[in-house]
Length: 431
Ligand code: SDX
Image 1 (cartoon, protein in one colour):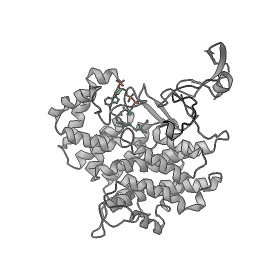
Image 2 (cartoon, helix red, strand yellow):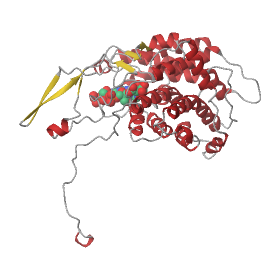
Image 3 (cartoon, helix red, strand yellow):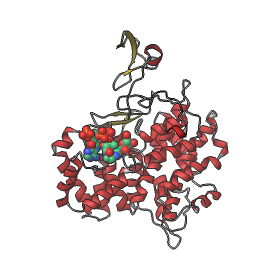
Image 4 (cartoon, protein in one colour):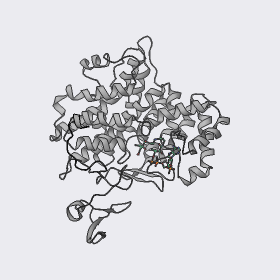
C-alpha cells in the first residue's frame, strides 16, 4: 500500500533527497529506501534489523506495545480458544477462515499425506541414537527434496501446493520418528482416522506392546500449542526461510534452513533452555540469586523464556499458555510441579523488578510451553522439534507469499566495511 503524498526528506552531505513513505493497513509507516544507494550513494545500517521492514506481508501482524498478535486479522487468543491447528493453517495459507467443505478438503489432503516414503527410515538409522532430534529433523527435512522431485519446482503453482501439503502433513511424522529413534522405540505410522494433534501424540507415545488410548485433554492442549506457535511475522527463522527461498532453492531445503535457525536458544531453542533453567533454579528460594545474575551485565546468564524483540508489554501467547499449563497439570493431577511453582514465582518477582520493567522484559511464548510439554511426557529435547512442527505452516505461508510476489528479488544485504583497504601481496620471504 503506498501513500504517495507522504515523503521523508533525507539530507546526506550536500544532497537532499525525498524518500517515499509507505502506509500499512495498521502499524508504523515505512520509509521506502530502495533507491537510497542509487540516489544518495549511501547504505542504511541496521544489524539485527531492529528498525527494518524486510518485506510487505498480509499474513501476521504484531503490535508489541499492545501485546497484540493477529493472524489474517484474527486475534491469537480467539483462535486458540475457538479454532484448531489445521483450520489456522488454512487461514494462514489462504487468507480466510474456511467454510466446512473447504476445511474438509484441506484436512483430508493433509491427512492422506502424513506417511513418509518408506525408504526415508534408513536416513534416520544413519544417526547415532543420542542425536538431538533437531539435528535429525534438519537432515531429514533437507533430504525430502531427494524423495519428492515432483514438488520442488517453485515456479509451478501445483507443485507449490503439493509441497505445502506435504510439509504440513509430514512434519509431525518426522518429528515423532526422530523422537522414537532417539529413545530406541519402533516407529509408529500415522493413522487417517484421528485428528492431527492426536496423531502426533500417538506416533510419539504408542508402542506395539499395548493399545494406545488417546487423551482428549492432551490432544486439545497439543493442538493449542500448535496454534500458538504457528506464525509470528518476520522472526529469525521465517526470515531465514525467505532469504533461502529468494535464491529459488526448493521449499524442503528452505524449511530445513528455518529449522536450523529455530534451534538456537535465543529463538525456538528457548523452550528447552527455559525448562532446564527452571529445573536448575530448583526452588523458589533460589530465584533472587538468578534474577541478580540475569541483571548483571558481566554475567552472560539470561532468563530464558523472558524478553522479546517485538513484545514490550506482554506476549499474548504466554498468557494463553499459562492458562493451559494450569488446566493440563490440574487435569493430570500434577498439583505440585516444582518447575511450574518456580515459573510462577519467577514471573512475579521479575515483573516487580525495576530492571525487567525498565527493559520491558516479560515472559514470552517459551516460558510456560515447556512445563506443559514435560507434563505430557516429552523430554526437553523434543520441545523445539514441536515448535518446528507448528511453525512449518508459518514458514510455508510466508514462503508462498514471497514466491507469488511478481517483484521477487534475491535477498542480498550490503555491509559497513571496516577491514583493510587495498594493499599488495607480499612474498613470504619479505614477511
Ligand atoms: C522466540 O522474533 C520472534 O517472533 C521469535 C518468537 C517467534 O514466535 O518466532 O517469538 C519465538 O524466539 C521467543 C524468544 C525466545 N528467546 C528467549 O526467551 C531467550 C531469552 N531472551 C533474550 O535472549 C532476548 O530477550 C531476545 C533474544 C528474545 C530478544 O533480544 P533483543 O530484542 O535483541 O533484545 P536485547 O538482547 O538487545 O536485550 C535488550 C536488553 C539487553 O540489555 P542491555 O544490553 O540493553 O543492557 O534486555 C536485556 C539484554 O541484556 N535482556 C535480558 C533478557 N532479554 C534481554 N536480560 C535478562 N534476561 C533476558 N531474557
